[in-house]
Image (cartoon, rainbow, N blue to C red):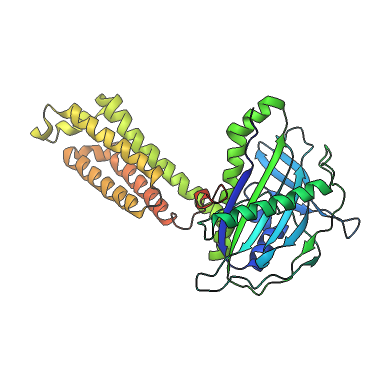
Length: 386
């Protein structure tokens, strides 16, 4: 089986190098926005010059948790104030699909759209501590900057990660630390609100032989890539708009639950009573409208049913469009009026059109009010220069 491609994610964030550095290198802030980790904790150092060791944990449901260890080092400042943080990580837990891996984070100040550069960097860095954020995350964004710059960035990051891997022994089966390499900490930059390109590239080895590699390629690796990109956009919203990651997650759950229910209800009511089981009352409702649809009830029901199914599918594709929810509200009102005109008594029946349509209108309003400022993995680039 061919080797899987490393995970790459890239995004541009406005907020300044120092702020982005703090939000990604501080483990207490890191665990708030990264969807892949439930907890990240630093471990004490025996010697000051050792790499920063850390322990991570992820809850996977049913009371199960995946735990692992890692260490970060080699924060290097390149031309123009760029910074790189390399990472190794691994888990000795038999339940963990990931055995060990490595990667890097790269921070690149971009030219300010109003002119000039987003950072006055270029200063060399002094030794200090590293952080666990350095390589297991990714983001992307609309690129400003050339493909050559991105390719050079990837090469620089690969060099840093390779140097880190070559300077430490592989993590033990227990995920323990390796030989020390002194990390460095950048001096504060003069940038406050500049745009920084934040990117990651990482890879890992799996357990369970061929079955493990298949699960990784078909399911786990795409999920990890999506979670990395979603988390990076969540971080962007936190830095740029002040929306806390917990709020973004809650808003996303509410929004997508409402969208899913609307999609399901439109499809169900288009498919079941109008196409599959037309004897359940829909045909009679059309008949009570008089001679307008006489002899054409089946064809009219089929057309309406197909229309409702297609309209339901539109909710998943265009769930960020306010016009879609205005159409929801208008359509529900028209359907309710039609039911009331054709058979007023149906409004008094159990689970009648009033209760259904009002509930669906409520879901449409919830989806409408929560559609803005949602994290999206699609805002990130998933390949260098892509």
